[in-house]
Length: 236
Image 1 (tube, rainbow, N blue to C red):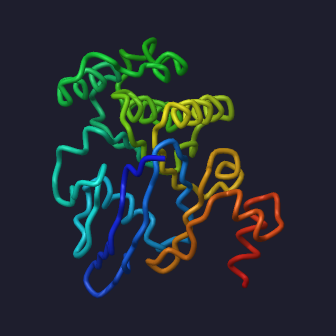
Image 2 (image 1 turned 120 degrees about the horizontal axis):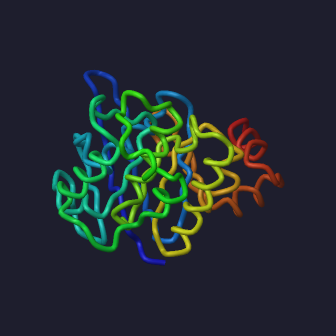
């Protein structure tokens, strides 16, 4: 498998609080990686560092073997779905999609699967302020996949979605993995990680506690469910 992203000795502090304490790892294409850990473990800072929303104090981020720390060009290869999408209240859904296409200057090879699956075109006339939390999540998901990125970073992607909408998104994630995409997912829903992830990264106190394939994780613990496997490893 081809390595898409590599993190080398990534460190980040906010004031005296050291949030990332030397993260070293490689993310391969065609994989779904579930990034787990308790609150304040460093998950959000790690994700935002990859996205370029946080600049590390030390270390490098490599994309396809090239150092991209502090640069912008590689971001066109990333799709991001935030846990809570914040958009201008008076903007219509259709205007939001048009604006993003204008900003990215991409009009061809768009991935409109989720726009169609969620029937968003019928809601293009609605302003963002009138949308339910679940509909906002659908918009965020559709935007993340729209430009057919090589890397998808999804933060609590099914939070707020109804069960059917959540299943649609999970099927889309697996389909994109099969197309060779790298998908990083942060989630507190372990059953979701069990369904989707090939690999689990567990962060604890700013360090990688373990980073293992789901198969190895379950084999080493003798457990078939991720929740039980995690409990056994973390208790050791």
